Image (cartoon, rainbow, N blue to C red; front, side, top):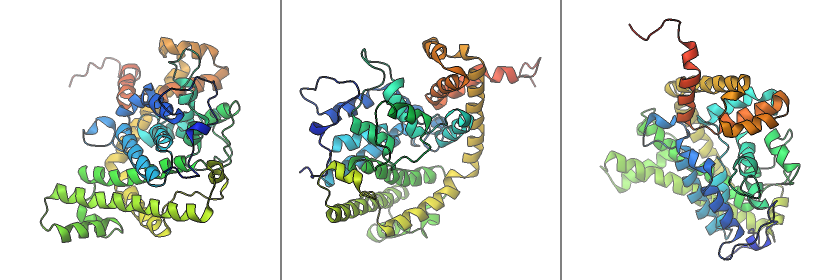
Length: 390
């Protein structure tokens, strides 16, 4: 049953470029489908989550992470009577703007673009779906609904000044009301992201051998889950034990979000999606107790996974790859592919060219960035006369 505060696709604010309505899909279903069929979505298959994409077949990539986020978002949205298609669409698009090599690539591009409007993956996702996807005859981008674009831009909350340049360029033409909270569906997509990565980063860190189950025993949320499994299934095989425990961690987070959202929505009693946006705080959140437990988990993962020595060594290497490629293309834009040369020609000055280069580099997959770096940069660093022999 649809809640009164759910976003109704029949009442959508529409698209920047008006289109005929579909005869068999809602507007938000069309948004979802366009995102899935986009080039940027396919590239997520070969982009880093934590571990560089080629390091192992079992580690999450941005694509597998995104699919998990979308599944969580549909579950929560459905339980709350929200529009599951809008929640799913925002979830599927939330990481489209990520550069190669995850947050390492984003940090490198943000530093390189600091004097030219900066770089932010949420803003870049909006830029991709409004300008850089070029498949339709009548417009650039995917021409998503206002509600989907708002959700991509604001799913983490109101956007404070200074607004990233990539986002500011679009909202100057199509106001996404960056000062308000997003719809409940977009808030669901944001917390589904938290649930998914807290869960799967535990899996990936254990598989990588960066910590053990025994080291998780003292963590709130995680330790009790393992203890519960041991009580119910003594002597369970290690991989089954791990999966059983971590799916309990996953379930506890999802159930907490649903319980809190129901309480907050009942107390606020918003009569429409617009009323949700006008509230002073999000309606989709963890409880105070769960938030404390999740923060403890994140602190553990920060030290043992995200800042682990092997991860940090790889981060330093791939950050240099991004810096090298950006500098090379900025100095020699003729090296950009032929279908990017029209953007180069249209670029306004050095700042405009830098944005084109950032768009191109940010769109690279991990493996393509490494291959291009080897092809374009590595040969220039070889010592004269070095034939690779001993």
